[in-house]
Length: 173
Image (cartoon, rainbow, N blue to C red):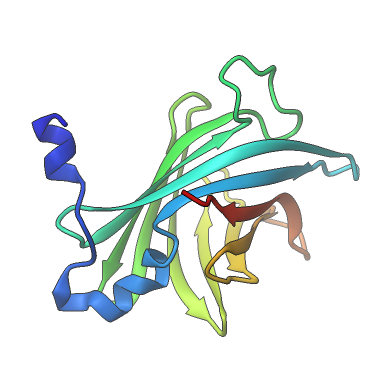
């Protein structure tokens, strides 16, 4: 392992906020995913993907990598495009919430959100550069699966629209 990788990765949560860090820490590991993109016209497209979560920055953050579709030479995934991006999720005790940044350099997509528990779910909310509201939710969370919903709400719209749904299953190593 290079010095950079060794310095980035951590073996577990930092003790100072260990309980709060488990909100996303419970996802640490490798996941297989079924991704369904939903077009505004009602069309749907499904492809396999993978997600990997790990502890980083002295255990003060959780980072993930989302790869959709799985095969590197796959054609463009309709509606949502191909994803090869990473999320950095950092717990901020001053607001008792998570500051979240998603980066997908291949599609020039960069999103910033605030994440909090909402009942048994986790809800992240933010705004795009064009003023659309975003809401990304982890629902139906168990130790071996979760359902992730990516929703958008244009500036003048009355309702949220489901753009992407992901059903993830933990890999058995």
